[in-house]
Image (tube, rainbow, N blue to C red; front, side, top):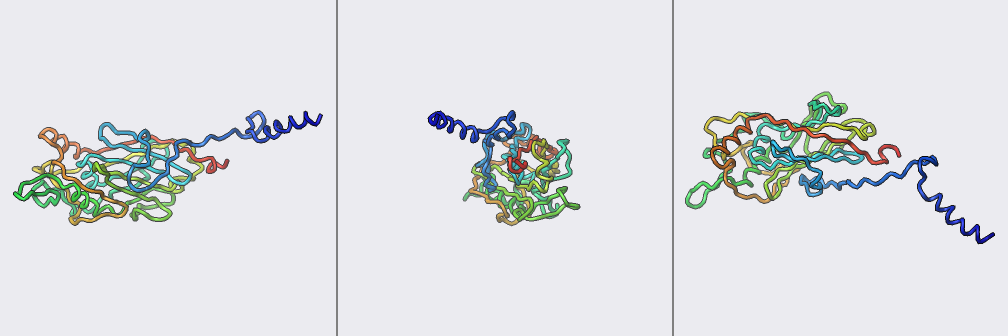
Length: 293
């Protein structure tokens, strides 16, 4: 009899330790999220898995989304140099639409559009500041590092609008407490990356976001290019060199002028004149602790 009881004891305790099914009345086991990303927030996509990115075939931009219990994370990568120049000149707005209708009511503007009188798009030989010369005085194309330094001069703030409790748009620094943060960087291929970190509480009550599908998009206005400007012309965002807050421009390189031959150059110009709208879908998945389990 004693031996029988001793044999039953392990089964008894095993029954208490094993997760109950719904038939017994206990919540089922919640599996771990295998897609968790440890975000570094350094303006580089190093920690983002390649399969998380979506590529916009028309514009060549790549973007990805993620969230944890407290923040929405967004990253966009821009490889094309003329596209980067266009963004610096015309600014870019990132939108979040909780209804998934591609509405432009809430989001972040970065780069922030500046006074047009403080910017210029030059036609190559005049005041570009981004071309170099060899000892014989021959033009050698762009100095990418110099161009990035000129761009970074104005990358010191962002403008947020439409978030919870906001009546008017507000221009703020790139890295501040208790609000949206933004980090940018160039990698070794001269691709420009922007990472956004936005508190869920700025978007809506966090618990209401679980399994909610939204749309996230970007808009860049088309720019007017003076007649006679060359596709290899420099871009000036204000004049002086220097790094911006949140950015760490890496080692530069010299490349030939953007656009290549005449047809490619014309296509590049036409693309810069066009307004761009890019939208992606995302569904929030909150950790069980946030959902109240």
